[in-house]
Length: 251
Image 1: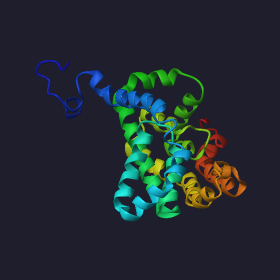
Image 2: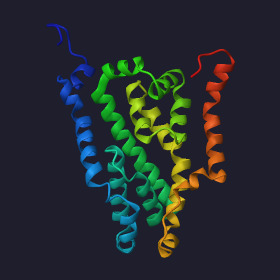
Image 3: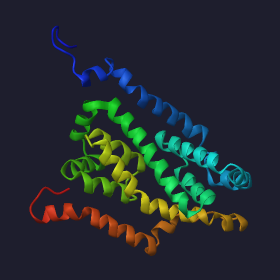
Image 4: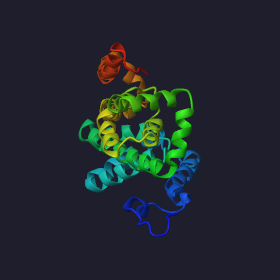
């Protein structure tokens, strides 16, 4: 509550008075995500894509712009609500639009979805949860400490390293004060390598469907793809390594 006679700042005026109002977007995301896990776990699958491939291709050929818009909207929703099927969506982007511009559509949609959940988390959870995370332990605490010490390097690392779940990479930066612009830039650039690989796999699904097979998602761990990604991880971690060597605070 603002004391009598004290003017209200722009920031204070822009914030809802009730903390529940600030949490409504995040609560809505959590509810839709919970419903979606059960409602779409069998729908957003490779089998569904295989069964509807002819209709999708026909619709794309007749309505290319509408297909792009609908695809990106669906992809954004999948990321915002953490629904199952993100990998299938990436493959679909390659199947419908080839490696390029499919990879561009995938990267843009994934980035927009990430920004959506990032903003909801930052607006709704506030400093209290951030303080609890700071006092916590484990992977989230290590990521948080690393981001605090060197935001650019850690943000790129959590995007490039496959061991960090995508939703964690979206939520943790929101809780440690990462600026939106920095989050958006590192998300967009950091997901490009993995997205391009999966999109290229999706671009070859026509032959896979013809043979009645399933896509090999383990292709990302083949040396020809994994080694360049590891090289990018090393490049992103270089400032942290130099800081540790020079006696700075490490991870």
